[in-house]
Length: 423
Image (cartoon, rainbow, N blue to C red; front, side, top):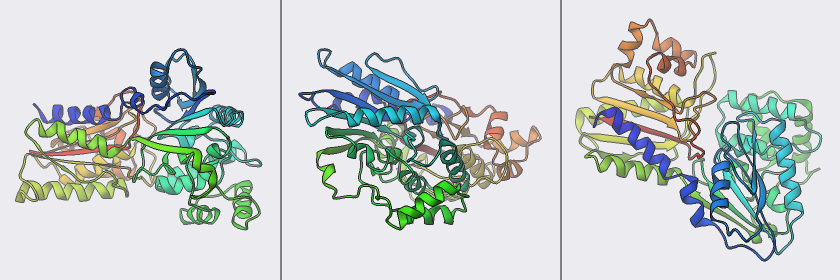
């Protein structure tokens, strides 16, 4: 098996561990005495809805609305799938979120609200509080995306600008709530996945203000005024842990990065390669994380420490990119381009990095493959790797080499997957 085949096979194994069509059916609750309404949002929402339909008793009423990213929808019969904007929210998502909140309000104690939650839901399930326009929410979202803020900080802000996130969806209904959560965040806390529509929120308005100031995000006047009123206690906080409303709410995490890394590790081990899982919660600036992992790969090859090659260094999590250039890229190609420079053509090291949702940033690729001869091939084409990294143009670099990994929408999301094969 070639290094390329090993890398791609391990990525496919990681994706299989988070396939909604396989994992959702075994987690479904029993039908209630009353109505069952399915709602949700995220990149996996379409596949999760299809899985519910396929395994819900045909004689039992089922209805609902879920929101997914453009191009991620699937044909369903009883649950409507609406496509909307991501990573910047839009009016389609706003209208669908309003409908979801209305459905939740209409349910009673004998009913079930089944909420399908996955990564990407923070942007897709966007319903600004009264007095804040979608245009203003888009502006703040763009500022946060460009700032390099980690997802947990971004979601703290989003929760305090939302009429449905930060536990407010669960608070809006008298029904029993079961949320099935595919986690794309480090730590797998449901409060951070899709900004926790059914989970209590420990964060505060004051923290949201501090985060925006720390990252220098320019605020529309309406948002600054709203957060200020919240910090002064003039408007209610998001529902907190211990709130009695959550006694009838269950948040069930059904897929995680950890499980995907474990299946990928088993895949390479079965092929005679020792896996070394470095963790499922790696964060930080993508280009800096790449340098650390590049140094570790060199150490493994040179000293056979901490394990002897062939070795696969496997990790997950979500790095960030602080935008400074105007190139095309995502955090995974940024990571690989920085790693290419750090490894400087090391002949025994190959790598892959990809987003498990199939979309690295806002491009059409999941990620890319780094081969030992990448820098030499790029130089032969007149490409300067350092200049392209400074311009955040990892996509342009790997596209020119024909090394992009293109899966199309995977309709799941358990964060990023990275593997370094040291032969």
